[in-house]
Image (tube, rainbow, N blue to C red):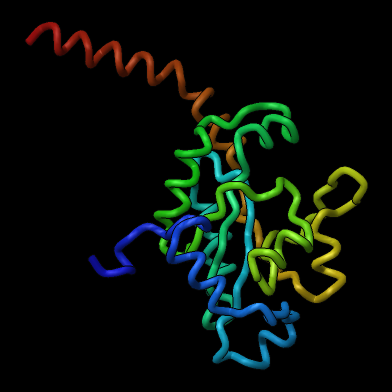
Length: 197
């Protein structure tokens, strides 16, 4: 099967590790400006999220990260269930395995990291040999910081993506809850018709 028809590998898979190690021990992160200057060299970009109830806003964020610079290798970190519960206060609807699988099937994704820190650090991003971090520019408060993405912004290693208006996991959940009664009625009608047959 052609590689482009396969889901993206996980970071611990042989193909992903081979790509990372091929960069060598002397690898150094490049700034956004440096990445723009050398369009022939592969740019490794890291983007993270929960990706619960994967929707068009998630896909658009990943598309922006993948296509902003030519020759982008996009690594996507999917937060664990425990981290989501600890930092957001509620568990995701979909479990970690499901969320990782869905992200791996998004055509913009080259690699999925299954155990990223909930808030990215320079040490982590350097350890996966990513040049840049892509996320929306809204400040995300983390323990001890007004914006967990500030270290990347300060070092010109941040690629700002735009949020998709009126689309979020919370909004999708609200639609489900608001339409639940209608769904129940529809299912009741279907069952009634099946019983008549």
